[in-house]
Image 1 (cartoon, rainbow, N blue to C red):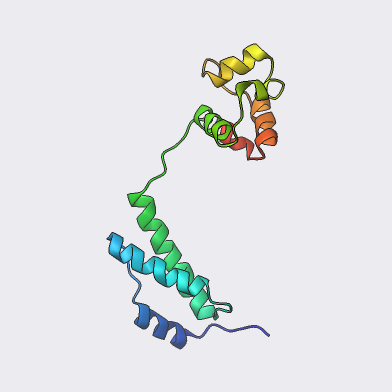
Image 2 (cartoon, helix red, strand yellow; image 1 turned 30 degrees about the vertical axis):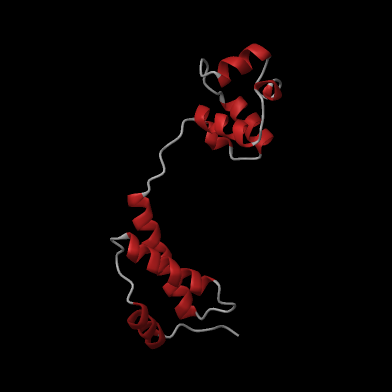
Length: 132
């Protein structure tokens, strides 16, 4: 059975929750609370699903503007992954290359090549694009 979208029901939901562009932390917290309530419902109607998608879009816009994630360099990502996984430079010998090459990469004296990026991605089980 396919559920159909009812514009009148959606209009009622919009009137009830009154979503709008988020401009303050208080409004963001309120939108998050509504989104979490909708997310935790066991079976959402198509109208509730549309409202949830709208709220998530508004929340992401606000948080993207107020809490931007700074770009990280491939080296910063490598160092972060090493710290997060309690990995030492010696653990990467053979993944990156010889002891000397590994030392140069980890210490920022040499950039990460595409082949090394692929090897690091396989080692850390992440996307190779993080290191390029």
